[in-house]
Image (cartoon, rainbow, N blue to C red; front, side, top):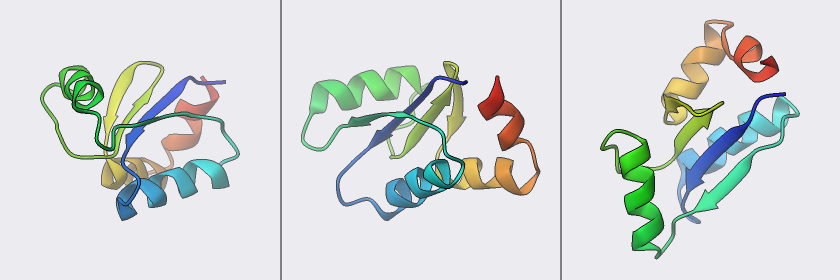
Length: 85
């Protein structure tokens, strides 16, 4: 099973949508809530090559992007294969 990290904030609707898709896929993930945590947000941004919006999603340490990219992978039938690695 893949290692999934997702950086979120508490009130972000895109974060909730991304987590919902991952839950529908029945995969576990490590949620890193960066709400009010500037240090965690800076670490996220460095890891995400400068991206500062949430969510930021990593599968097996590969940067996937945000919610739109996660759903695009699913619509292209590529997400399930990534989640099974």
